[in-house]
Length: 153
Figure (cartoon, rainbow, N blue to C red):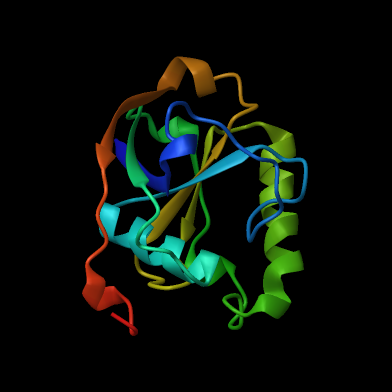
């Protein structure tokens, strides 16, 4: 399986996690958020950062993960509350993700995108024993921003 991550070029040389808290993890939990496509990853980056400066040099990380269903825990929409996309739900989602992270049962947490709930993001647990064996940075690709994405262009 291939997943994608878009980041500034200075962070595109290896797979690292900051440990910052986000929707599906608590601070100090080292996970990497990826998208199931380049386009979903683009939307996630724009929404998450609030503002993207097109002049910044971005790269797409193409990440290969072993095709093994036993490596994945999936969170289904039916498992979530009706307002799971709201900021107020972060703590409940972080609890779900934190439990998954600490249990170490699977390498990946497959979660619905808050932007497009019928598409999926994959959260990689960099502390899972399978991370270095089953996850590989295949290549980095140049990324360009289409100016039509930005209102002031």
